[in-house]
Image (tube, rainbow, N blue to C red):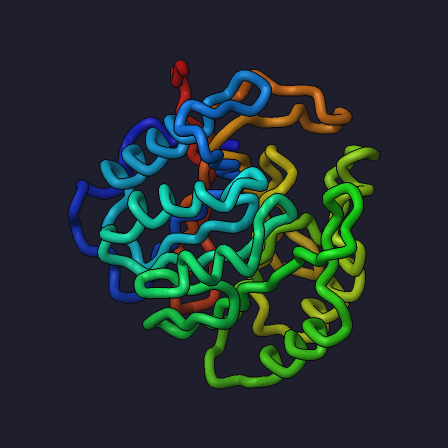
Length: 272
């Protein structure tokens, strides 16, 4: 993925009226202890560094996306999310990952500017579907949408109020070419992919969970995007071996003509 060392526009300048900008952070894995770490990576400072970088180079934004594993099994850490994102001046769209506690997420982030799950619409003709792949019976961290939510996806995509749609979730809906990781992906990924293929309005699908980057086109010209973690990365095509890649996040510009301009931003040179 391309490293973006400098802003694509002057800080603070307005976005084109034909574009809606999203910044996606995923797998922040915050803990009760602000100094808490995963495999040697201190999760809170890394998230803070990503947010500061995004504010310098890519704000203003239309919305922030927090796509799961917001906390690492410790609900007290949602308070840090409230403090960090509550005053950014933009909606913060949140979905739970397998390490989250959905009831606590809704309780603590159930107020503006946060929105947990559901749908959200841009000002330029895009419908975002915020899917929840967390399920209580997950044994090892895999995800599932379930028949009821898949039916909701079909109904939502059949609504042509907006010309374009972006599907957002936590678990990979397509194989990541890593056997162990693919076992912990979206169990009903084929059903979601089939729904995407049935509805030409869907222009993109984005997710996290894999702690690595992926960007490809499937189902014709639908863009499938995996975003690296703000904390630590796994090596591509490897079974949970820690990579030395720095924290990362994704910038997504949704254009009114249905195209997507997106890049992964790596914090090259970051040191804990």
